[in-house]
Amino acid sequence: MSANSNNAMVIAQGDASRVLVYETLYMWNPLDAKMYPLLADGDPVWNDARTEITVKIKADAKWNDGTPVTAKDVAATYHAHVDYNSSTGAEMKSYIADVVAQDDSTVVFKLTTDDSGEAVNPVLAERYLPMLYIMQENYLKTVADRNNNDAEAIKMDKMDDLVTSGPYKKYFDNDQNVV
Image (cartoon, rainbow, N blue to C red; front, side, top):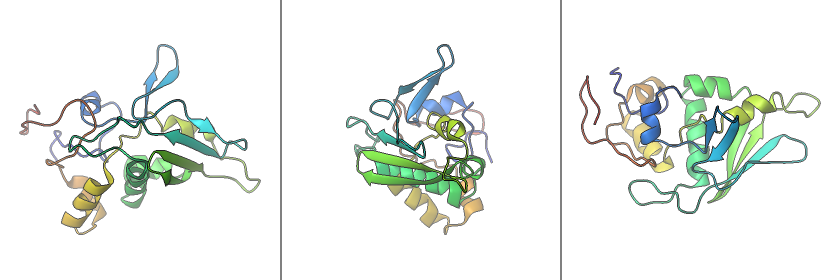
């Protein structure tokens, strides 16, 4: 696969250029060790048992096709990573059992719990909030359909027709450049 793939399921958080087209719920600032909302509206909220994290989505967050970013997009992104066994999904499913859209603007991360009902590792679960590049649910369906729902083909799809939430979109690319 070209290094110029737009596929957020096969890129790492270190690929800073992807931040320009895909956004995460939060941005991690290593200078003060805090998360700041990007697509999220406010801080994540833990339930009393610390087994669920609730995140609100900004009403102003939009995809470049004009549709709103929703909690369903967040849930679909998580499920795509798990269902297609991306490296992110393979690691994330150990700590996050499910991601559910409670309504259009509220998403709940349900953490994996041990036999006593305690979250297996709430710190690692929360760590994914600023790492998971959110993808549009409808676009993920398009990619799955054109690849016959084949996990390996989906991970190899360059996603040249990507739908983005960041401030930029792809204009041109070849094996050496992405503009």
